[in-house]
Length: 496
Ligand code: SAM
Ligand code: SF4
Picture (cartoon, rainbow, N blue to C red):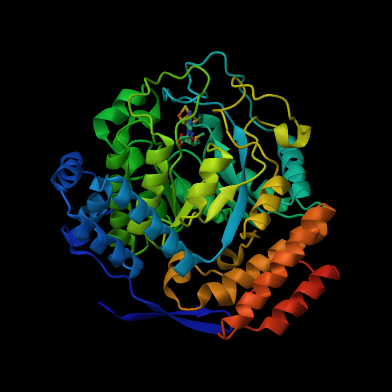
């Protein structure tokens, strides 16, 4: 406990406080690839939590003291349901974000590769029994066109999305990742490709890893075993335990950058929040590294969906649960998608969401066809509520004091555990993340932004440089300024 891990960064050494392991995680010596959810244990935590105001405040204070919360402490926050305490939890999340994360928001786009699917998930437009769905898989030349269109918008980070189908095996996924990395149009390039696809066996994950992916995301949808069976009516995905242990197999295959998530609305949100924390504990205990990101999609309308709405999560509950997650796992990246409307996005971004998608289109082939017509649910997995273009989102972020970022430096320099470093290495964000955000934003402003956004962007960059200068840490402001000038003169891909 309290030891120091030294991480070597290129030309830099930073001291990272060792993660504090919780006794709850070490109960059994080797839990790798074994199911780790005990539904009764989770409900006991929720039902037994009857905290006083002081206890809730003590838990918030612990998180603000940069310590990860236990299941019981997370249950304490979940049980705090008076308006006053809910507001204190949200305030706590906002403070944590301000103290630790600064004002960056990393941008990415999803790219649907194929919507054939042999599973029958009752909430999804791609389910096998949906005969209305128009099925297709991008051919390589279509994929190239899509990536060129995304590059023309300024995207640098993508998540490739696939149904579960024999055609989308590990070799195929790896192939599409390589095609995407190979596309270079003008100054455009995709520097980080993440994947959201079906669970694989260890060998399959190895094959995909070799293609150079960033994060492999798999959402458990619901962590409750019986409820899971209720929604997953056919196909391989029906196997709860195979999915639950999938990211263990990814770790065994050497993919240490994994993303977990739950589809909110399938079951009680309180259960899912605790289960996400349990999943985080499990990965930390077994692999010494928690998930890189947590996603918390809320269920949206989809073609042929069969969903009774009993556990639908209101906006109020949703913003509350994101604040609780922020406090519970303060060093894990949080991803928010265009499933949510602009107003909800705005509120939860204040709690320290680290990544959002921008300019999202879900219909296969729609980036290159530049389709703007109304969404067609027979062609898409589900309905989205934020259809703003990437530039509209960047413009809005710039107007509201955020620093949009396309940074991929940690991944490319082999600095794994970047969220943990951001969180725990003093000055890391000011020395690495903010300068890299500024440099990638400069590229965007030079290559893709309309004049008004460009002006706004350079103003925000100047304000951020002044703030960084005031920080009096070892930040080489002249070097950042010099790199900005180099980018203006045509250099690209400069990072710290
Ligand atoms: N087919 C793979 C799978 O199911 O894991 C990967 C891609 S799937 C298209 C990505 C995610 O979309 C799912 O894990 C699920 O959480 C989410 N999703 C499915 N239907 C949805 C809906 N109606 N509203 C919101 N999200 C949905
Ligand atoms: Fe297929 Fe994934 Fe949709 Fe389920 S969620 S039907 S596995 S695409």
